Image (cartoon, rainbow, N blue to C red; front, side, top):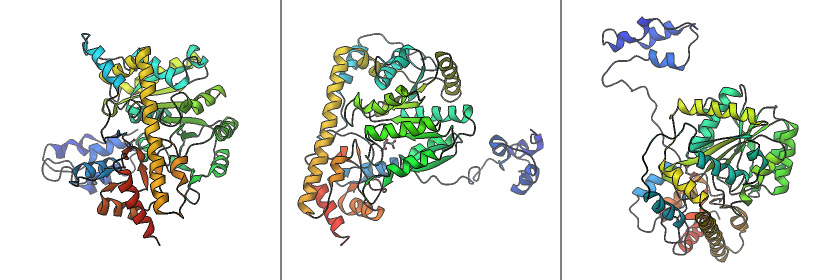
Length: 449
Ligand code: LMR
């Protein structure tokens, strides 16, 4: 590959004769160039316009909204936008198992050295047991390459880089709709991303047959990103029977599942929610699986997640682990220490593990109670309208069918924050605010006429 001549870049940095857009374009004309060359070629000059050519970041649709919520001075405001689990008092809980693990860890002297590139061995082993089941043969056969992720997002990005580097030409397919960041994370790695049918607005259900037919038409090696439980943003999950149909098509078409499990335990149970992951591995598929402890440990800021790549053989798993390490080393070098120690201590200490299972159950049951309570309040005020979807969906999120304008009205007039897609995080509901939320929804829905 040809490179730009020296004259094309640093002269302007020295402040002598800044390169103009035109002169750069002329030098680049016909030169095969990559992104880094373009960066060198920008008309660099210290001063007011150094970064003037940058587009303004519009903000993240979920995180910016949460910032707006925090800045909102209204006392009765309700956060139903960002995926945070709040307790009955509207607080982010500190789980008792985590508190106990923290106390236990504080009793020890803990120097803060670097973790291995791939993360702490005990944590990685705990991730495997939790995701695949403690006795899964793929673990004992050494067929799973697992790395500690910087949250679920960091794990997805490392997986995306891996696909980009080692599965050349693979396209990634995400559900329509999905969590916004799925697309950004995949595109950020340079992957082509498309959408497969998922949500049916008419029935507030799943476009299962269309989805299956779509998978049947994908070329072999295509990567299909799915969520094993508590689909974000719709709350609509596949039944076991439907998963079995997906597995059959994926095997037939040699598709590669990428399973993102961010809410394990918030659907039906910690073991139950991993059903699809395990069924795929049992069926001989080799999924990439990301998981997160943000929600089920209420450890959002600790950025604890994992990426596990299931391989046909242990020898391949070793190679994969090596390349995942190489990928991590050039991005953030090694993961952070404290959060993983909390998670591993809980999962490795039988009494704390038991306590965690109970606390996840309590969170799950509270979510369900809020769904029921909201549905009851809505039915009382809107007798003709079916809100069964609220109790049929799973996990933190519910797709309400509200339009962006209706969401804006809820926020502006009632201080109730939802994502503009109509996604509601039901974990922000509690006995003290559910009636007010239902009343506001009734006003908005009645205004439709
Ligand atoms: C969400 O979907 O609201 C959460 O996962 C937070 C995030 O990072 O978007």
